[in-house]
Length: 150
Image 1 (cartoon, one colour):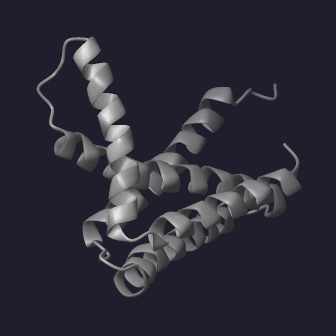
Image 2 (image 1 turned 180 degrees about the vertical axis):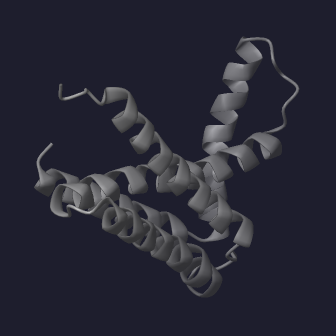
């Protein structure tokens, strides 16, 4: 994938995260409830009907944090890795960029900008965990795809 396309993916992901963070509580809850209801319908079809909408909604919201930052880490790492030679720089810059956005999302936008929402340290930890899993998956993929030059 060309670096320009990777930059577009980073920009789209960041804009998406910011838009989702700026939704007020009712808007955000409406969207996650739509997905929760769909999941509950599928669960009933497969014979697992003991989960409430509110419990599914909570999982949907937290999983959304995790996936957003996992994806952002993978794309950020890919772009930086194609420009920087030292792995330590790529690692540190990737975490600084993704971590800064997570802090801006939870610590500033949701705390001071979005109405009816508040930043949660728990969500910030989920964001960082998504980034760590994203980075770990990158390294695992690199390890598994490594071919001995000899």
